[in-house]
Every structure is written in C-alpha cells, then in structure tokens.
Length: 478
Image (cartoon, rainbow, N blue to C red; front, side):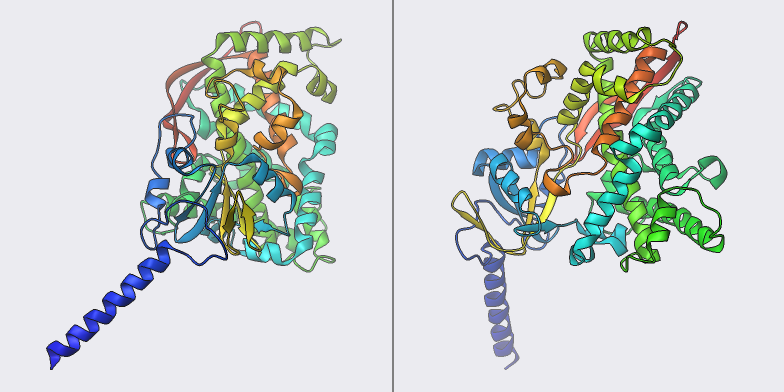
C-alpha cells in the first residue's frame, strides 16, 4: 500500500516539477518573447552575468548574447525576468516615454540599501521626482556651480592633491571616492570628516561591487560590507538630522536645511525618507565620478600625447589671466577647455560605469517583432552602445580627438553615461565640472606617476584588479 502511495506522490511531483520547469523556461506572453534563455530556475543566468572580463570591452555576458540573439534578448537575473537591450532607437523611444511605457526600477540589493526610497514608493508619488530634481539642481546644478561650487571644488581638490603628495603611494579609486564623498556630504548636510570621529568616505571605494552582488547579508560577502558601510553613513546622517531638529535656530544653508523647511509643505518628506534620500544622493554622486576619474587618470598617464595637450591647454588658461593665482572661472571652464571636455567625454564613454540602467515595463511593449511583457525588467546597457564599433571606430581605443567630429545626432542615442530623457542624472554637470577641475589642478601643479596595478576589469561593474596605485608629486615650478 505504501509503495502505491509513494509511486503516486512521486509521479505528481514529477508532473509538477516538469510543468514548473516548462513555465520557467517559457514565460507567459501575449506575443512572441525576445530570443534568449531563462537559465536555471530561480537563479536564472545570474552566475554567468557576474563573470568578470579583464577588459574595457562590453561585459562578456552581454556581448556573447548580442552575437547569438541580436540587440534585444531575454534572460533572468536574481530571480527576475529581464530583457536586455542594446538597440539605440528602441532605448531612446522607451526613455522618452518614461511613466507611460516604463518606470524606474532598482535591483533588490539597491532597494534594501535605500529602504524608504525604494522604486515602488518613488513611482507612487509622481511629484517626488520633480521635487528631487529641482532641489538637487539647486544644490549641484549649473547655477550653483557658477555661483559657489566651482571655487569650493577647486579648493577641495587642491587640498587633497597636496595631502596625497605627502604619501609614498595612493590607491586612486579609494582616494577619489573619499574626496567625492566628503565634498558631496559637506554640501548635503555640512559633513566634516575631521570632526566626525571616523572618515567613512574611504570605505566606499568599491561600493558598486556590493550592489551587484546577491543580497545575502553574511559576513565576508560583498553585500555584507556594502550594508556595513551604508549603516555607518546613515548613522552620521541621522545624527545630523536629530541635531538640526534640536537646534532649529542654527542654519547652515545646505541641502538638509532646505528639505527640513520643505517638510511643512511636502507630505512625502518624512525623516526616514530624507535620511535615505541623502544617502542615495551620496551614493549616486561618487560611484560614477570616482570610477570614471580613476580610469581617466589611468588612460591619461598611459598616453603622453594626451597629457601634453591637456597641459598646454591649462597652462594657456593661466597665461591668459591677469592674475595667474586667481581661481578657475565658469567662463574658463566653458570656453577654454575644449580638449579637456573631449577627454572627459571619452573617459565617460570608455568607463560606462553603470552595468545597466533598469526600468520596469508598465504595459506590453513591442520591439522588432517581439513582445516584452508588462511587469518585466528592462535593462539598457550603456557599454553596449558606447563601445559599439559601428558607432565608434576602434571603440576600445582612448582617442579624445574623435569627439571633434561626432555629431549630436550620434551622441543623443549612443552616449548615455548619465541616462536619457527627463530622468537623466541631475548631477551630470557637477560630475563633468569636478573632473575638469581635477584635471586642471593636476596638470598645472602636479605629476602623477603610475606605480602598480591599473588592470581594468568588468564584473560587470568597472573595477581595477588589485587597485590602481600612483605617486603624486608637486611640480617645482607649480
């Protein structure tokens, strides 16, 4: 009798498992799904996605599937059905219809780090994006850069370079991450690392590694380290917020002062929201810039011709001033750094720091005869666009001069380091100004010499095997 029941149960389990496996590999769709594979149940193709390649080239996972399936393919990452797109026309169309066809979406690891600022809450209040964008632009946008941030940036960068010149060796990504963290946090909530008792900026050098990992909080994992760094930053922000509430008469004139005042009129501005919003802004500010600037330093130090032209351009800026010791002006940044802007664009193109820009579909979307079902994740891969040989000749070569001839029509759909459309990064100008100011201080006052490391890796985020170490030396005539 027992053997009969065991046979029946075993048979039912086999039927159920077979049906479940079939449904996993063949998801429901009101049309024809893009080609691809859903991989293993639950984990999908996540392990393959995480495989590193020691090159600036498009991540191997994406490149191999583009060659096999075309510019749009399906997969499954961390248990979620995903369509990956490297089709510039389709990407541009989708981003122009943000809020209609798609909405912003985060990986689970990122959502857990932001907690009160997760994608579902963000998308539920349509005025949040408008408020955040306007407030961020007020603190880091063009007018703020013109009026007050440019000299502050120059002072902060000069101070860091001077400190680094006293070291025998500097790990670039770590040093730049700390510099950007400290500066951004100072503008957001008047953070002073020398008075905080701990300099947490230095611990954020490889934060993206944790974001791209499985969200498993076990000591020793990248995600666990990510969480520990997040807790340290959130603690500092929380303590600052509580101090401001206890002393409302003290005004610092920073971002936190502004949002605390706006709590009276904006219902979504809870204390928790403000804390995690500021953490998210810090995270967004330093990861792209630190990775790109580190790569730029590596590429420039490897290319004497580029370094020479940069030096000549910035020395000309000094020579054209009535007072050579006066600070950088907005006019000099905009109109006297033509080659510098080309170097920054080329560095942004090659870095392609963000492994993917994520959106969730709000309805079935048609593309190239295929259907992307409602509720799926859409991943646009910047490196697949920015390293495309059909758009950029010899795409892995560091060639700033190529930007002399690239038209706006090409870059509109094939150069997206800060996203596309109305939800593009509000800190784009800040990022480019910071890089330009760093280059100015570097080539006019210091020599940077590579010591060791610098081997590039994509895993799939941009990184450096064993870091990138340099020596910073002040020029005798600087």
